[in-house]
Length: 77
Image 1 (tube, rainbow, N blue to C red):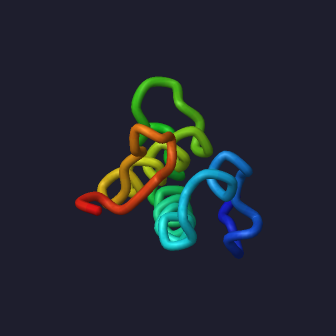
Image 2 (tube, helix red, strand yellow):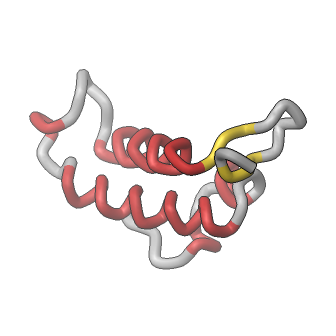
């Protein structure tokens, strides 16, 4: 189900990525949730939720990367 606010995101997101990345995640997840309603639009046998999480992480990874220290930061920093 879509997320109304950042605080509703999974701990794996809120405990690890910066606030702006959390905003990206939420928006991408909610968009993918709507876009991949039809199972025929998803790859393999992935659920709607799995697909939305995958899309959301991909969106975060376009702008952020995990450093050698394990912390997420904007690319190019």
